[in-house]
Image (spheres, rainbow, N blue to C red):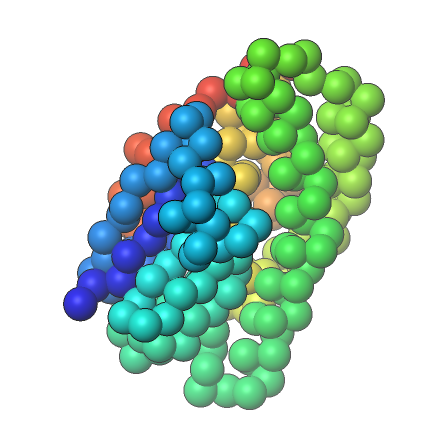
Length: 219
């Protein structure tokens, strides 16, 4: 039985999981969840994820939520299929993948997701973005990208010379970010720009990107 992913393809966190599934060449079923109708807050959904957020993965009798936990499970279960996203055969390489995955989770994502929230989610709610929050997090993001610029001057990808979960986890939010007027934070850093152009040209992402349809506001 194919895995089921509950969510909406426009969600960056759902797209993160779909991207992983495509990289691992694994069959799955996307079960639509209408976020605008708040179906993720219905009792039937809360029984799968009590926090009322997408995505949720069901694989037979296993139910998982939190996108990075899901991608780690998929990459481990299907470690011998598709792209090696964890470098599982070498303990040191695998540790570096985990390290840069933690960097994404704790340093990159809080800043970029705050910007995207203000420029996409807040307008969808009929409210005006908070410019101060945007500027504060752009500054934080710039500092993270300075670290990336140095790192990517030494290795093709964050965890070495192979594409891994450490890179994959960045992709959906960065895709949305590049649609904003702040894309220069990526484009003005040559190594980061080359890395991003590589990530967004991968066949797996070309299958996912049509679902990332929400347009940010221009400020």
